[in-house]
Image 1 (cartoon, rainbow, N blue to C red):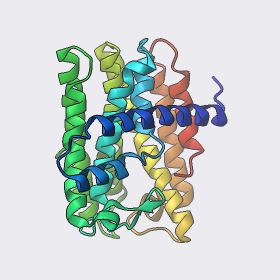
Image 2 (spheres, rainbow, N blue to C red):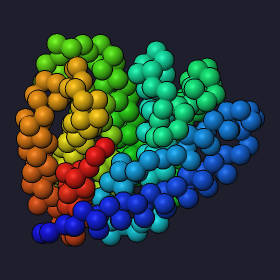
Image 3 (cartoon, one colour):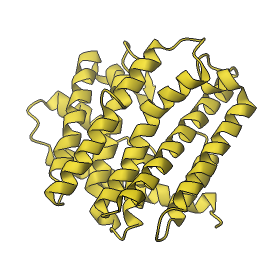
Length: 286
């Protein structure tokens, strides 16, 4: 099965445009926010959603089981909103202290730290408002809410951020791998599985997609480490590139991407786009 990087890149970009429109609709729907400052900050963050890889995974996973792109858009928006929440809080001075996010001032630089904290909180709660009001059956909504809340919570993204803050230059390969798994891969995995739930997939199919997403998420984050090391001209302390070196980190990524392809073989239907995402991550300068 041959996948063109340019083809999958175009698909990702086209889907990101759809999600951006859905997010604009979400901001419009929530215009009743009593605080103009909070509403402005929410719009500022939501209007800059990035590549939308996580939501693309959810939508593409659902499409394997015959779900239309249109039907996945509210779920996709919710996934981008919860990802945005994590970035707003990660950028805070008490966390990663990042002044720039996706080429723009971080939320706390633009609006102040207190507003950024509240914006992140508002985005997190908005996520579950969106999920709970999807036009799906109650069981599907509840299952997706459970999946994403676990992926983002005390045993998922938040735990990953905590471990990241506790990490230091002597952190082991296993320590960094665990941070990648919790902070990044859990949401990738949950996005894939949420799409499978939307499509009525079997337990085995859900598990295969969850494993595919987890491996892809770890590969994505390791590529990010490689990109940072190249840009900085040094191997960032505590990163995968620092621990393994550039060549071994690339080998680690390659192994994860081969695992992704193995998991896709367990699925029925057309998995070409999911296979294309393996090529996308392989060629990514994150």
